[in-house]
Each structure stands twice: as C-alpha cells, then as structure tokens.
Length: 448
Image (cartoon, rainbow, N blue to C red; front, top):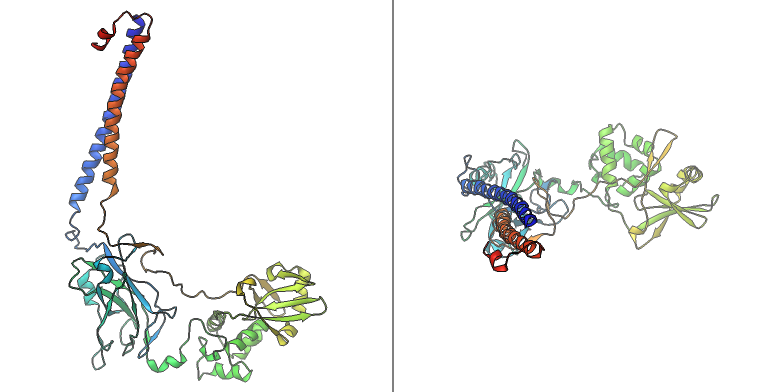
C-alpha cells in the first residue's frame, strides 16, 4: 500500500507540471491571436492608410517587353515582333481567367517616359496626371481612343499607330499605360505600365535596325552603319554588301575587316560586331576538306567553326588538341576562301563555336559562339518577377491561413489536456489494481 501511495504522489506531481506547461502554451497562443486581431483591425480598411496609398488586389500588366524604338505611322509591336499583350493579374501573380474581371473593358493611354513605376504613392490621380495626349499644333498621339475587351483575362494590341514622335518630351520617350474603363467593375485595379521607348519619325522606318538582322539584310542594317554613310561605301568597295558578307570577313580576319571600316572607335566596332552576331542562324553548314590530315572542318551559318571530322571521328571545337588546332590554323584562310555549303535538318545536332582572333599573328580558340539573346515570350513585369504558366480564377480572396492554424493549435492543446488528464487517472487506478499489496475494493478505488 505504501508503494501505491508513493507512485500516486509521483504521478500527481508529474501531471501537475504537465498541466502547468500546457496552460502556459495555451495562454501564449491566445495572446498571439489577440495581437493578430488588433493588427488586422487596424489595417482592415485598405483605402484609409496614413499616406493614402491605394493597395489593390488586382492589377493590369504588360505581358511582353517593348523597349525597342517605334516609328510613327507604323504598327506598334513588342520587342519580339509579336503583338503587345496586356492581362489582369491577382495578388498571387496569376492571370484572372474567369468572372467579370476577365472580360472587362480597358483603355490604352500614352504616358511620359519619365513615369515612375516604383513610386509607392502611385494612385489613380497620379496616373492620370502623367497621361500625354500630344503637342500643340500636331495631331493627337493616337487617331482615336484605344479600348480593348479582355478575353480570359488577356487582350492583344494590334493595328495601333503613333501619329507623332516622342522627340518633344524631355525624356524623348513614351510609355504605354493600361487602365480599367468599365463602369460595371467596382474594384480598384492598379494600372499597368510598359517599358519606356522612343518613337521616331516614320520616314526613318526603311533604315531601322532590327534587333536580330537576317544574313541577307544589307550591311547598313547593322547598327553604327548608316545607309548613306562612309562606312557602308568603304565596305561595299571590298565586296561586303550584306550581313552575311560581314560575318564571313569577320571570322576570316577581323583585323583586316576593321581596317576596311575606316577610322572606327572601339565602341562602334563592338556594337557592329555584336549586332551582326545576333543574326538568327539558318539550317545550313559550311565545310572544308583538309587532305593533309584527312579532316573535314565544319562551320555554322554564321561562319563560326563548330568542329571537324578527323579520319571518321567527329570532334567538337572546344575538344581540339594542339595538333588539331595547329592544322586548322594552318589552313584558316584557305578554308574560308573555299567553303562548301552543307544542308542539314536538325540545327541542334551540331555544337556551335566561335573563333576569337587576338593580336596580330595569334589565334585564340574559345567556346560557343557569342550572340546577343533576343527577348523571351514569357510574362515580364518591370518591378517584380513573374510566375509563368500560373493561371487562377477570379474567386474572392481567401482569409489568411494564419488564424485558422492558430485555432487548430488551440483545439489540439485542449484535446491533449483532456486526454492526459483522463489518462493520468486511468494509469493510477490500473497501477493500484495490479499492485499485490492493494486491499482496496474496486468500488473504493472508483470513489477515490
């Protein structure tokens, strides 16, 4: 009996300590919820903050980039050549594809190129003050107001032309803006802002510089080479009339090509070369057979060497050993003067590489051909990363899960307290019943 009493006292002390610990945790959870409730109550009205900043759940965004120069009286397109696309996004950065917001009417406007996208106090009034309509004595920037109807949360801007250039603004640039223009939409939806871009006179459209020229384009389509300029005339005197001719001459002997351009600065030279190397490759290769080493050297459509077949074994350019490099260098000029065209279907089947000439009489071999990457078709937002492929419905926003999680913790805590309270009595009674020294009757134990 004495053993049972000691066991009971020990168990009772342990249970009291456990109950005290659980009560402290319970009180901590309750205090945390009270603080959260006060915070939510203080910020429940999103339109009455101290700095009058409008916080909105939905926002309009431009899907693709449009930084490149535009031309008056010519259709406005994105940098990738596709139509400019706008979409409505929710706070989770997903396109709203259902509900009234996904098919509402929006308006396209022109903004000053100095419009500050990052302005945290930007609101509807600030946006409207930055709208540009045109200059005195000139036609309006658009021939008419531009309205778009969203379809599944997205709309394309096509057939729109500027009627004037942007040279009269201090920034020399415009931005496009998209705003809601639908009386049936009560929500405040943040406006979308594009990148800034210059609009040039349409008369210069014929000589514009494409971001990715074609091999067949005339050489004056390259940046820093004017259509009626001295460099074009000097290059054509050397038989360099197209971008393809330029790349062939560059890879054969870039130092000699630079001399053909006349007195040219390092900056202009680098701009021309990088622009030429940004050409889209075609599905052709060039080859030259070197009988001395039984080797067939292969080049891509931009005249960059990709590798060679040495006695029936193909080796990529970066894996050439010293003897193979010396062999190719020995027949370098002869190879470029006697290239043969080889057609192939799978462009990805060959590895592309670039020949980088160093100082005079030296040749450095470097990895893959360097080209300027063109704009991607993925969703882009100037101020924040996008989540491509995430599409959400226009369901009302759900409450934060934090409160729900705290209630779950509280219920779990209470359940645990109740369970261990009952379990403690149960174990104590079982120990007393199983003790050989116990003379208590079961009824006496239950009344304890």
